[in-house]
Image 1 (cartoon, rainbow, N blue to C red):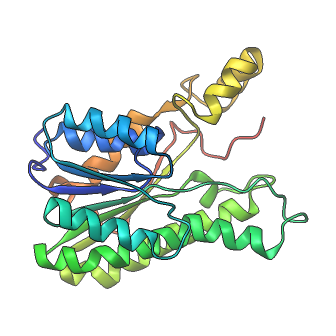
Image 2 (cartoon, helix red, strand yellow):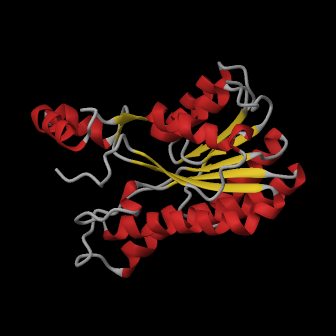
Image 3 (cartoon, rainbow, N blue to C red):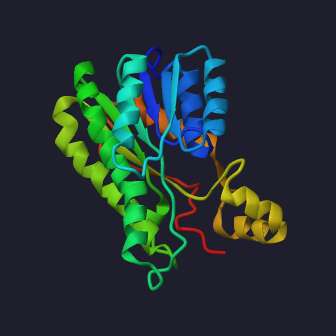
Length: 258
């Protein structure tokens, strides 16, 4: 299927590893010009090299999306380098290791800055560029933790629930300008360098039992499977999907507990 993305500009926050990297490469394979940001220069440059090998224009910047001003800087510099913005993927995110009883206000603020407010700031910065194009798409990567409770997930889950609500509300507000906003909520995803790869290598028997118990297919998902959904949602082929929350979890259905 031709997703009608050739020559369009896609921005992916946290695009050097995992779901972000897979999404950036999937956009590139569709002929999109792609901008990514990451906190580490080595991973950023490696992914930029892979994108250039696909024959598309690229842009990358080292940035920390939890810091006010960095999201807007990334969007503005990417738009200047690539000539505009058609699609934004708010992929950056992370969890807190603190339980509710242990966490202080700073822990909560850090999590909300990294997850929710990075999405708020990047989306807000993209709107003027969408309006020059007479439309645009935002996909925010939340988590099944945002709609299913689990032990020790109060902080992370609250930020992801906020992302889901933000997207559904913005879909109503921005639709008159031909701007779509959707959310993808992955389950447990296994990718190189990720937490599940480390767990699998360190505890193979426990990992196998976990995968067999929690997943009807007997395995975790991979980053490419999530990226396929993100890129389709971003494309004109999905122009009647707006305000949707789409789990991509292989029917896992609940945050992982092991």
